[in-house]
Length: 70
Image (tube, rainbow, N blue to C red; front, side, top):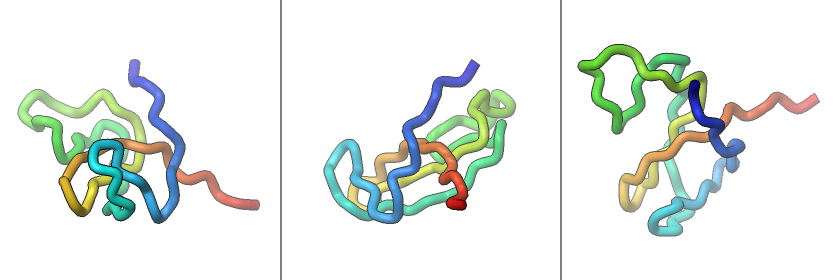
């Protein structure tokens, strides 16, 4: 069972490690390994998510998909 991820923090995400306010965003499908996960042991147990990576220090974290606005 996968752990819940924090909600999408928007275009100006703040890095949890160095507090920089710019991060790259990549969509990851369910089972797709993230940048920091080894791929040799099969698919990831993580669900569909957004992977964020700090432009300054390179720290990577996951966030939930951004829900559509109505």
